[in-house]
Amino acid sequence: MQSYEAAIYAALLLVVVAVSIATPRFLSPDNLFEVARNFSFIAAAGVGEAIVIIGGGGGIDLSVGSVMGLGGVVATKLLGMNLGLLPVLGLGVAAGWACGATNGLLVTKAKMTPLIPTLGVLSIAHGLALVITQGYPLSSLGPASPAFIALGAGYVGPVPNPVVYMALVVLVGWAVLTHTPFGYDLYSVGGNDEASHLSGIRVTRVRLAAYMISGALAALTGILLAARLSVGDATTGQGEELNVIAAAVIGGVSLLGGQGSVLGLFAGAALIGVLLNAMVLTGVPAFWQEVVIGSTIIVAVLLDRLRIRLARD
Amino acid sequence: MTSAVVEMRAIEKHFGAVHALRGVDLDLLPGEVLGLVGDNAAGKSTLMKVLSGAISPDGGQILFRGAPVRFTSPAEARVRGIEMVYQDFALCNNLDIAQNIFLGRWPVRAGVLVDRRAMHRAAEAMLERLRIDVPSVTVQVRHLSGGRRQSVAIARALSFNPAVLILDEPTANLSPGATHEVLRLVADLKQHGVGVILISHRLQEVFAIGDRVAVLKQGRRVATRRVRDATEDEILELIVTGGRAAPANSDRPLDAGGGLESPVGG
Ligand SMILES: Nc1ncnc2c1ncn2[C@@H]1O[C@H](COP(=O)(O)OP(=O)(O)OP(=O)(O)O)[C@@H](O)[C@H]1O
Ligand SMILES: [Mg+2]
Image (cartoon, rainbow over all chains, first blue to last red; front, side, top):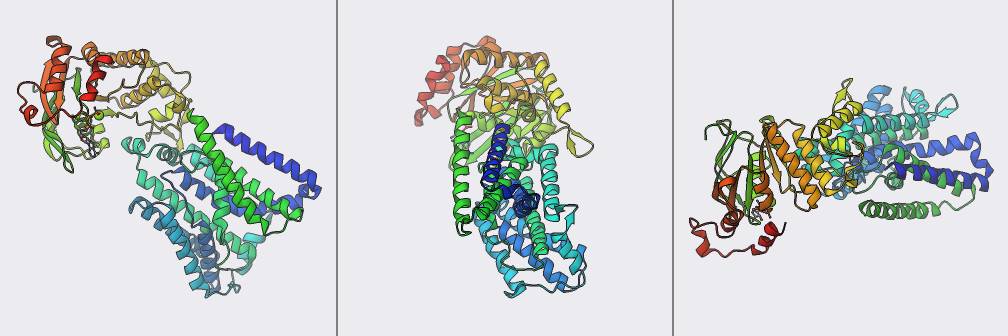
């Protein structure tokens, strides 16, 4: 586990060195913050995704992208109805939490394969966002608009707010997973749910909580993304689940569960961010981005398999 | 009889069409090692899972220190001091030794943080007391040999300070050296007054450390013998034929004859 983390950080360093040799502009502070801001949304939503996957049982959350969109739409809609910033944040996150609870209940109580309910919720959340926006971007954000936009577009010193947000989420996620009973339960359940159950760990509850966290975190991240774009749009976040899952898997979060860490996920998100930025800087057409991300996922999963086989022998 | 720690009375269990337990009685005296033997599919694991709360019986009664009890989960049996080490180890391979010993009972400090140091210290003390030798409690159990893994599983069960410990084929798949180590551990427990039920296919080890031996056949208990009054051949005969008192013989073919070589071979 630790050795894979070291490897992914080494790979990240390697890519950074290669990219900065190819395009020296890459290392300018402005560009670096731009890169960080772009992958901050992936990393933040990725923490929830990693928690779901680590919880095992084939756990995966395909709905994160749509839930990001829904969170942003709910928040901007409520802002337009003249609600204050805090209730807006609370209700937006609650919408994501409800999506996560739906996923979690269908997986743990109805015993559905996680792919199915989270795919369903992907569609439902996107549909609800469309119903709320009626297909038009929501850009009249009421009296709390300046505060809301500052949330996504502002800075702490030289650091863009989304990067600060990501740092906080990653730090809290890391602390929860490595230092709290919930984190220990999560790794146990992901490693062997039968053994965990016999030892008195409430497997169902742990997994349900994982999906709830993923939903809530995706919505919060989507709200921040809407604030950064100063608009609520149902299409925001669409397809983002691919990047998020890629970040987790590249970062060493095994799809078999029980394996991987938030720090690894962070490196995976950074790697994706740097690769995307490198393609922009070197003039690779944007259409190639999805091809590269898709290929990276497949390579990462192959590496994961290889790692498991090596660990067995 | 009244001094038994555990008495199981007329336990019944069906799995669909399979009648796995047909009115089984079993007693465990304090501090004794009771061997539980029988062919494959005789119902040994099922009977013990009923006792550990992992399976609810369809009928019958369990008395704990003379009082009727009903377990709907392993946690409820645990409260009474009944622990079981399951046949397949039930360890989390992705966790280290200390974490496996404290699975789900993480020592906590400041209300929310897992006290890793306390966990490591307690795990080390536990293993030392049991004279289980591991390089470090922070080694992932996937890297351990079968014998060590079994020892870790037993250590976890013992960390609950049980009055009754059930071991389901703890030496299956172990090398002779590792087997010896596990049997020594079980023999030590006796000194601490822990009652042990040992499911095994190896009669030699039941005779080496057991006080009594109970024989199951096709969901019935066909005999209980004091080890010192019995011979391995006699028990083997009971396992195979169910004894003279078992009429089931005549109308039921022996379906699992292949398992008979292992008890003597092991
Ligand atoms: N969960 C279950 N579902 C269905 N049938 C079961 C289940 N558990 C056990 N059985 C059946 O109950 C019978 C008794 O099984 P059990 O595992 O108790 O036997 P055993 O004596 O432990 O055998 P072995 O020596 O092979 O471990 C078998 O016919 C088995 O197939
Ligand atoms: Mg068995």
